[in-house]
Length: 160
Image (tube, rainbow, N blue to C red; front, side, top):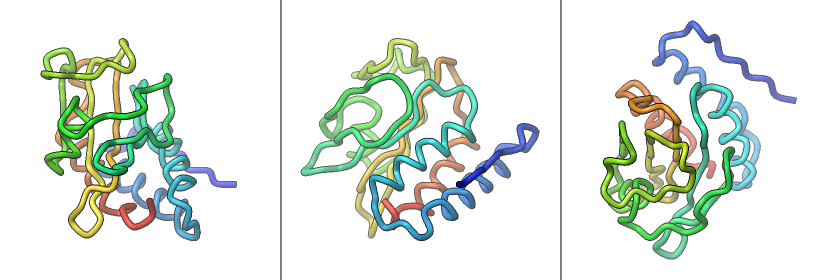
């Protein structure tokens, strides 16, 4: 059994350092990408407060396909360039969206979502997946969150 409990009083950079350490420990001896994404979604959920959705979309044959997640049922397929996730994947660049209702073409899988952070996972310079986090709070994510999730994406890229 694994137990990873973040300290609620930690500054964000330290919390994300601990999240990366826990992610690497959790996926260290497992080669199955889906199993690793499932555990990582649960780990993100436990480390990052104020989320209503956390998980992965995998790049499969030029479109994003839903992967393991925690939250309400979600869109199964997202074309590249559409919505926040499709934009992040197509541009291979993180998307920090303070108000999803102001994002052109936002795909609303959960009407409660107000802000979103999507970070591409790159392997050998190519997008293989995106990490998607939604919050019911506008302006929930900031540059510390973006940097923390980019660090996580880089750390786990070979394991998903």
